Length: 415
Image (cartoon, rainbow, N blue to C red):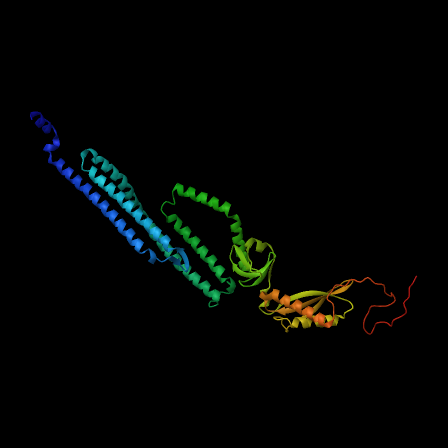
């Protein structure tokens, strides 16, 4: 008994009530941490159960009719978010519990101070940096708000100009109002970025400067063709060679203009084929616009037939004009006309020219016109052919027709 009393006398916490207080506080901290963890776990289960019940009622996320996320994807995302929040709060609970526990013992108390310094010092630096950059942040917000207002005003003005409600001529024609508005908006955005960039925290650091150089090199080496297309697209826009909906011929492709951007022009061919033509290619070659004159009914469609000399030219002219006037969408005023474009050895080239205001129906008009030409010549008994003759004839006779044709003579062979 004497030895036991001596041992107990040597243990300080038996006589120091502060140790018992620390032990009691530590036990309470551990119990509170355990209860908080149980509460978090219970809350996670309740949220997951609620999400399962609401699974069928979750609607897809749509923006202007475009579905960005389905209901199942939203459900999966919410479940992942609940799990992340649970583990983050559980980790925070463990860290706080351990820190409070270690702070109760003198031996480990200085470690708690060290860990708190690791956490608090960066937060303090962020707070000081935020206060220092607050004027710049306010300036950025003002610039962004002002830029947004200007962009809306520019968009409104050029949209109304495209609709014809505002007349910006002679500076901006109506058919290039929207592309001009896009250019103006892009310039405004670039100017705003130049004003905002120096005020963004961290942009003056060496790392940011190096990153900007790398990005600049990547853009310059990787987008040379894109920049060329954009420049060619701007030139084409202000050349105004065609409008959306026009029937054109570009780089050997005939079709209706579906879409025109600074990078490309999209055509829809008569066979319903979509063809993308880069702006540089369109600018390098010729562009034929059939609709430009068709809008005033002045587009000329033409086709050529070759008829032998034995058929009077007046007959051929009349047959071709009659066939043209029977063709749907061919105008009678101005009247179709004929050009005799060549006198070959065996036949004459007759070119029929007729006017129309329907460039989009050119294949159909040509088909109907050729059918009517066949019917007209067949009904008149005139062959549509390019005759080649092999014959012997009296060289004393002339092939001239009409009243000046000389009287026939006897067949003579001269030595």
